[in-house]
Length: 366
Ligand code: KG4
Ligand code: ZN
Image 1: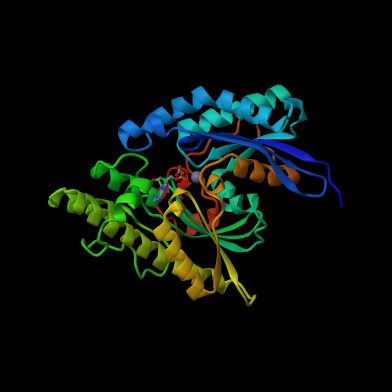
Image 2 (image 1 turned 120 degrees about the horizontal axis):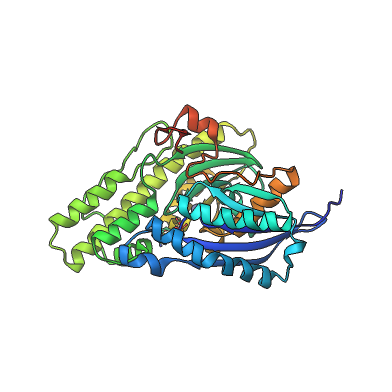
């Protein structure tokens, strides 16, 4: 059956990337990325060694109109030709989410086109499908500065959270490690660079939650242990390299063990024989040692590894527009008073039954 073509503007502003993209789904169901613009805020946050929510919100407000206009111009699409406007509506830093969602609401009202409220995690869950066919089901490890989650992506709208961090994200631990040793921001690439010169068995560091039956993560204790190790060291370049290498090895070990556990959980629900799909996304997935560790794990467990191009696995608006297309086709429109959600578990059933990081006034946090 042939459908009408669908053209969606997607907007992303939940952390420190201001992004807009235009995607078109043709009448045969083929999706094309007409434009995708991402403005990073690294310069704004660098002096603080981490993302400062207030600064992020202001930067989104300043940049967003320009980025949206740029995405429309690059795509050669007129505003009137849009089918709908989709925006990340949570979870994330609330000031930033509000900035993007308000822009989307303004456009939706002015153009008389539907508003689509996208869960940022659903964008990540679908992101491998932006660059290559990636049939369902697959196991996704989302590992970034904001999230560390293992999701079974069984189909559109069918996401099962197998594990999540109970405190910090892995990327935060990389950023904090870099900050205490004065290596700069973002911390991940700096830690990876210096770790190459270090001995990864020099410092003894914890492997939090190892052996637990679920597939949850914890990085807060590791962060603290690294700070203590650095304080107790002679702070030479050699010590820094040893601490960086030992820290990176601890993260590799934790990701390997916890992901291995999630693979067992994922396979429990699957009858098919043969190779299963494992996808990594998020900025931390750029780390070579982590990739190699996960490649070896996949080989042992009978999974193929898919690592989408970095521009699609870090925060971007193309993934938000892609999720927007799916919701548009289902008629899932949001009211104009849809409230931005700082917390919005993708799998609310798992979050309610087994909250990874406790309950807030408005239900499970993640
Ligand atoms: O997905 P991402 O770009 O965005 C957000 O989380 O917003 O991830 C950024 C995170 C940062 O914490 C950064 O330090 C980390 O990914 N990262 C890395 C590497 N490159 C970026 N961590 C480890 N090794 C890397 N090479
Ligand atoms: Zn993200």
